[in-house]
Image (cartoon, rainbow over all chains, first blue to last red; front, side, top):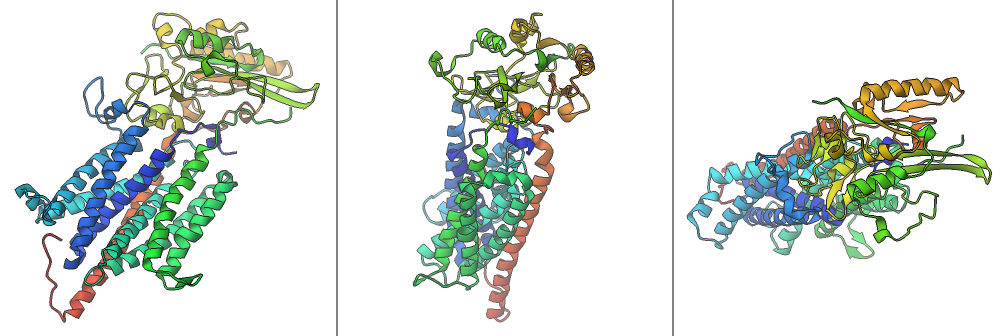
Length: 309
Length: 274
């Protein structure tokens, strides 16, 4: 039996699941918006701004979720400032400590990106906001926020791996799995928004769809590697969670890939569109976090294994 | 730094009286469960079942019975191991968990914000949230008592000296002698768990004498630090980020090149806002 099965769960439940999902989408959306800003078409401006809006809303919700989840929310700032010395609190070897600072920097970049977008949309009239939408500031924000966004998308899985819990600490592949899932979920979000606004001509939506299906293929491969790497700890999935995981693979990853590559076009007489694929990706991304967090949370200290004297 | 102090728990003389549990609760003013109402586990003669945020000592009952009168009963008074390399201390993002001058590991309740990362990091499942304070709590090895030269409450109360308190070096010698004594008496399975400073986690400052495999007592055979996965997990994530970035660049680069071709060599205009 793996050593991780002798530990206690940290009670990371719905707030954390939601944070991992929303934070991942926020980080991924900023990254994709930054890519489109730097390399996309002029017609992508609406998608870029949408990406920045999703990022700032997502990071704000993430911050609230994390604070509310604390046992003592009034002490959230102890993660950034040592309450007894007033010095900065930072441990580069502790993912939660690094993540707090990463979230702060990502929040700053998201705020600046959203402010520039608001000015471009005519919602804010400030000289400083105008400059944020112009070079070189727009480029600095895109690059800095893109890196910070991708960090937020990926560190959450590393955070889980740096524990002693079943599933999480039994593999090093959870970080990259979450990162890929965040990237695919973010692309799916932008695709859905673009389709809802009927943005297609002169935009890079079709390229986002192509990006999404390639990332989904990578995600599928990494998910399989992750499951194999668990070894005997995979027994934590020998219950209903195993069925949930199988559903995620089929419905949330495999089906969107097949739709994306045009291998499946209809289901029970209904046409399957890129929008359908994007919805499935989002659902799969959310369920992936549930199916990797809750099975581990349910394993408790076994106490004393019975053996014969 | 003062001398490293700790516990040596000889499980062979534990009688399961739970005086240590009571003394710990009493000294540390830890609340009873269920408002003091009797609460039966229904699965063991042990009704405490586990360590928690308000139970810092727990006498485990290992009940191994084939038939009604054929079996074995082992007991182990479990507690924080005060690891020399402590996983909880390693991951704590607030600096609430500190190493004291006695080489013990203590959670400062006025600093902890209840993020719970230490709970998942502990290789022994020792730490949990105290619902009254909203913070993570565990055994302090009676830091307040030690600071004034007193023995921790649990070992002071132990009627059989199953829990022995003292300088770690002295306890290790005593424990090694006890193992020899048991082996000479025919108990060939006698062994120490966590006494080796070159073993897992640099040794435990609360170590045990067992007469079976650690798993039988609910102890991990090879406990590790949570950071063992940090480098590999972070490297894989970084590689994934590079790969996704490359896919993004390739798909969009393709798009731009196509635009250039469509415009017959005319470079597309770029909007500074975009």
